[in-house]
Length: 217
Image (cartoon, rainbow, N blue to C red):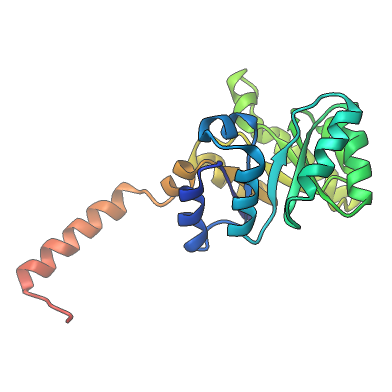
């Protein structure tokens, strides 16, 4: 499973990228607002930093303006992946941009039927929102499972990008089900390394090494 980091924080992206932990980046208007950056400048800097897809989201909701914004964002760098909402206007833009060779991430997916439409429109990625479904007492992983089965049934090339990930356990479950990609905030990716037995085991090894006077160099 590929890891995308869901942030516009350049320092966090650089740290994870240098470790080889991420395959791409996702942003949205809320993350851009949090960063305090201009969307075009931030997107360009991120694209220069990472080799994989960088999702940059349109802000318009009508077809004509959405298409203009998508084309403008696509011109920033070759690895820009234009993010559009799962609406009819968004799917129309997805089809046109995809046919022109631009990667498109269709976001705000909450049903398998929506995911099926996005695949038919040629989306590069579909972003089902796990955490937001969990918030309303619906198991978001069931949606990932349904989309995986449908896409496999018909060999759709659209990649399932598990989004709105809140915990390391979400990452594990998405991987078990077979999501192609998971995008998560930096703290969630970093939190995947934590285990109490690792911490206690290391503490014991350090104490034993000190007692034995072990030195390597």
